[in-house]
Image 1 (tube, one colour):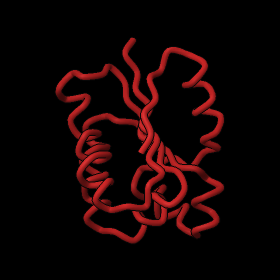
Image 2: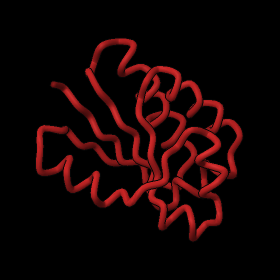
Image 3: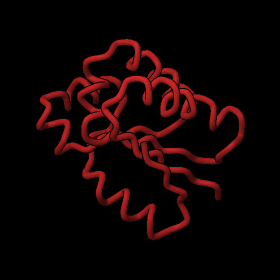
Image 4: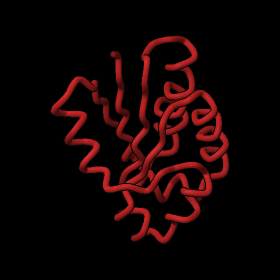
Length: 111
């Protein structure tokens, strides 16, 4: 199975708009991957919580079937866990998923 884990940690809005969320929104509809997961980690969590345009883009990504999670430690530190969960982002210990992906048949890309 073709599986992709996208790790988004950049706090740069242009990286989010022009790469992370743009690519994430087309990968399943175009059949690039069979399964995709967008992991939001670190500064990207704060950026997403504060930026309505990125929230709208993330909703479109979610509609395509891309799985969404964020680092619960980071989201708690930023005080936005409930806000992200309301967007459909699962707050988890992302290190476990990252380790599993790296040790198995997932492809991993980071931004």
